[in-house]
Amino acid sequence: MLTTTAKAITAAALLVAAPAAAQESARVAELTFEAPSLAGNLEGNPVERTAFVVTPPGYDENPDKRYPVVYFLHGYWMPAGAQQEGFRLDEAVQAASENGHDFIMVMPDGFSKLRGGFYSSGPTVGDYENMVAEDLVNWVDANYRTIAEPAARGLAGHSMGGYGTIRIAMHQPGIFSSIYMMSACCLQPMVLTEEQARNIENMDEDDLPFEEFFALGAISTLATWSPDPTDEGFLKVDTGVREDGTIDPLANYRIAANSPVVLLPQFLPELNGLEGFAMDIGDEDFLLEPNALFRSELDRFGVDYDFELYEGDHGNRIRERLRTEVLPFFAQHLQLETE
Image (cartoon, rainbow, N blue to C red; front, side, top):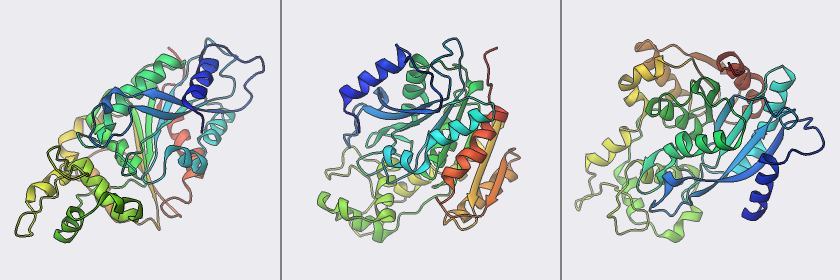
C-alpha cells in the first residue's frame, strides 16, 4: 500500500507530468480522493478514500484525447486492494484497447467498519451512494481526461457492487448511461428474525472480528438500512427488539425499502431510460434464485435488459468476464469519442 504522501506524489506525476517513455500497457494507480458525502457517519468510516484508476495504453502520449469511463463497484468483505488483485481491472482495460476500444476504469473503496457500505446512504455508515455518484465522478472528471458526459459513463459491479449498480441507477439517474450487474446480492427483501435481532442486541464490539461472512453481512446491512443514531450501543442500529422479545415490524420495513425488487415499480422511467442494461450470474451461484426473481419482475414491468447465465459460481469467473463480456458490452453502449 502506498502512504498518503506517496499517493499524492504519484497522482501529481500522473496528472501533471507525462513520463518520457510511452505508456505501452494499461496502468493501475492507487490514489486517494475526498468523499465529503461520508462526513459525520457514526461508524467513523474515513472521508479519504482509495480508488484504483486504470488508464489505457497510449494515455500519456495522447494529451488531446478524452476517454469514456467505466466505474466498477467491488463486493463485500475484502477491501479494494484485494479485489483488484483478484479481478485485475488492468487486464480488462488492456484487452479492450487491443480490440480498438480505450477506456479508463475506476474502482473506489466501498469498505466500511463492518466490511461494506453497500453503496447505500444512512447516518450510521454514511452516504456511500453519493460517494460514488457525486464525489468520485467529480474527482475523476477533474483529474483525468474523461468524456465528462453521462453517455460516456458506465457503471458495473459484482455482488454487493452489483446491488450498488442497480441502486445507483435507480436513485441517481443522469450520471451513468449504461449498467452491468454481476451476481448481484440483496435484490429481494431480507428478513431479520427474532433470533438474529436478539443476537445482535447482545453483541460486544470485541465479537466483530470473529463473525463469519454471512453473520457479519447481516449486521452490516442492518447498520446500512436500519440505522439508529440514538442507539446507545456501538453498532448504532435499530434491531426492532421489543421488551417481550418480538420485533417491531418497522425494522424489517426499512430493510425491505432498500430492496430493488420492492423499489422496481417506482423507478421504471430511470431504468427504461438507460442506453444499456445487462446482468449475469453463474449457474452455481448461491444468489441464483433472487436474481431470477428480480429478472421476473423486470420482465413483468417491461424493462429491456440483456442477461446471461454462464457456467460458474459466485466469483470464479469474474476476472475473465470483465475482460470478455463487461468491457465489450460498454464498447457497444457508451460514447467512445468526443463529439
